[in-house]
Image (tube, rainbow, N blue to C red):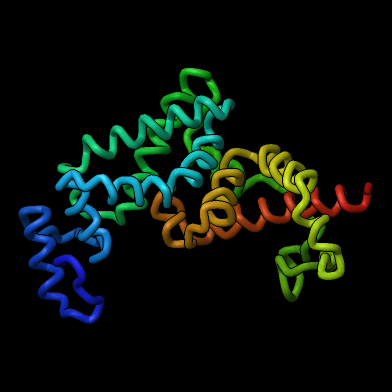
Length: 238
């Protein structure tokens, strides 16, 4: 797609631009027209395009790296290593995923490699399977499997609508939230980081992690329930 092309221009233009960028029509091609335009700018070495990419993804990349590594400084190194790999690999990017998914897949691979050196890493698929099959303490908040409405709230959580905004947004509350997320099992921490911190969709998260939508939903539900319970306890104790 050429500079300034509108979303309404027809698919043939996108395919033509795809062939120009990648040199061939790819049957597994899923990258968007906006990504194609950005990739072309990056391959031309346009600094503004790269700076824009860093501004957009740097913070969520750091948060996700922290799922795997222990120190913030190490997470920063992982992110730097990821950007170097992105620049080196642009010519090999074939558009079989979105640009964002490709970048974050490189990030998770870099982070896992660093984590393995610290003996902190277990394959995500194994962690997810353990999490899905394991009976969670938070289950008592929800109706059992043999109920007419299994999985629904048994008792609704405390509402925070009347709580002062400054308390909800305080540094102490933020610190409590971070501790609650850090205490989660690794697979739940990864899911909640992607969905609720980085703002990924369910489809994007499943695509990156290679898990089913149902498993993603269970992991996210458990993670959110545990974090909310930690916050409820924190507010009650104050």
